[in-house]
Image 1 (cartoon, helix red, strand yellow):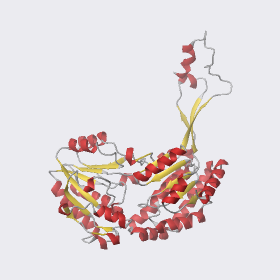
Image 2: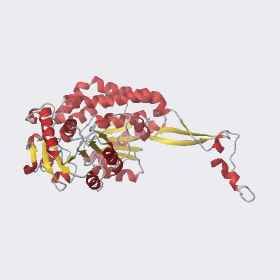
Image 3: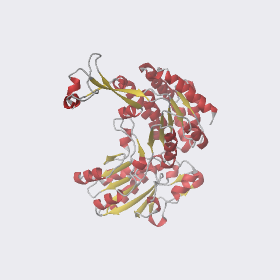
Image 4: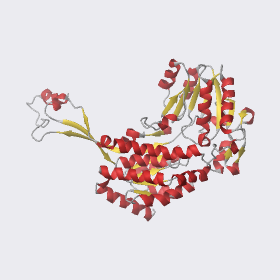
Length: 458
């Protein structure tokens, strides 16, 4: 194990043991430091994102404004979030003057491992929640976005004391070394395969985890849908970050009566957004690596390609591509694509689609476009998924009041807003009694009225 990592862990642990991070002032100070770090160097953060994989301006600024919004939420609501919460207890105890209370306390030294696709936002959002909840944090940015990781390595020590927030850069070996440490909490965003590694390592220390993973996110467009609205939403939602978005629509099931018309509109939407040659568009990002480019390009079936289909591995470029009509056996339907190749399937009976989708692993997101309330409700009621939208895509993850996270193979645990504060806090449950009040539950029980003894708890 790296002694450097042990040293920074021990330093954070020792500082946490003094209770300094539990104060309101410490939490507000950390949030203010994070805010200044983002604002003081906003242009550098944006430049790093563009350097790493060609993120366009809107996607760059999104990575700054979302953490800023979360910082503002926690700053504005910290007193309420930290306040002890009174809870109902049985009347028999309440009448004796007892009270029930839940206090939120920080877990302790927290490891946050971020992904490449939103290397600022998806590293700092969990970190902001952890700091607001009173936890010191060690950050591990993605090594596949080296410019962004280097900026974290430069700026974190300038804005934070190492016993409060530290950063570790590197790849697989550094993560392995970190995972040997007995963290009090681990927050991981990334692939399911690495998530399993993190969970196995956490089990050695019985460390609680939040895992934000991914999966194939289904989208349904039924015969009553507003096809123009659906086409615009899906064209953007699937191709933002070059499709490398864990909540992106992974495939579309369209009612056969409107399928041809929808595909025509979707093709027009993609072309309008990214031009006839998306490789020249300033609004279309690149794939993160040549390996991933080749992987995504391998899903393209030429005879089913109705838009796009070109790829340049050396340039980490895959053109926005529509495959129609696809079927359940196509290569792009066997796993999460995580790139700008979109299979489009036709269906006749929505129940057949739902039945098949229920045999898939539970996805992080799901979407439906429809005007029919019964169809919408059947879809939402029958399918299990982390979160989603009706007549929109992706935007649910922008709303701080909506807990964000997966279910099953797409992850465990939720965060954002109050849910994030609660997730990064231990709910310490307390039954508080006046000093002169006794509740008789003590033996010997012979000769006592057992029902009367139990009555206060009913």
